[in-house]
Image (cartoon, rainbow, N blue to C red; front, side, top):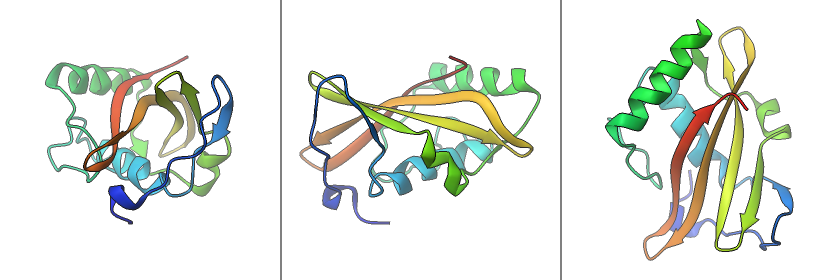
Length: 129
């Protein structure tokens, strides 16, 4: 995986949904990989990802448990529906989540920011839209 500082940002266009840049995908997939093994708080940190507060980790765990399924790593086809959209000053990223039995109704939403240290993804919510 490239270092988060080396990952380029796409050209922002307010309110225009774009495919998630392929350079961002390893960062997002790494978050979902941690969720798939029950690490909703990212106890094992992921490069380029902000820590997840305990209350948000608990909320994500509860939402996932309501499905009665286990999350699975993202398959290649997950990127067909994933999107990034520029909102004035930040990128909002939406990624459909998958379970061990296939696509789920859950979506991970968060923001991708450029920081002095490079890109940083912040998980904001996992929910059923």
